[in-house]
Length: 151
Image (cartoon, rainbow, N blue to C red; front, top):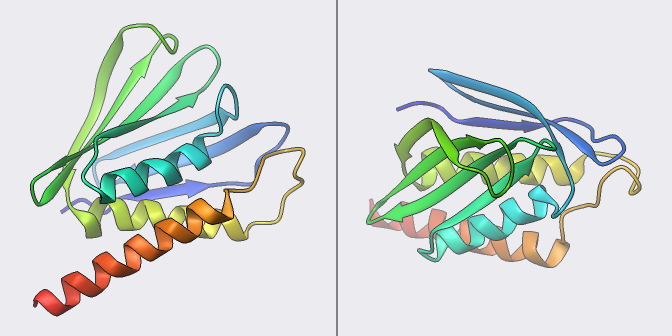
């Protein structure tokens, strides 16, 4: 199984350097916090996915965009990355990974938690909403406990 890594650097002036990597794919980009904050959106999307709901995150590079889609499929999760010339433009698939809670959602959750501990100016980027992050932490803990007791 491909080990997923998502790393956020220190944001500056509304731009967030981001690195996504698996054993067979790597994507580096610098995303904008408009029209919506993608780190908040990722937190919301992970909450929805843990509740079995399909979701997507737009990483706006102005004008191009990357879209991360999370699609629960029974016990697994399809994770799809596509690229577009703009938010409303046609999308082109660039990567697809089928994984599960441990291989897809957990690494993304950990990257958000790590990002929430970084020190940066609130003018550069808004911190992830604490209520949402706490809710996500609660859901992740429940899922980890469920998986441990299932063995």
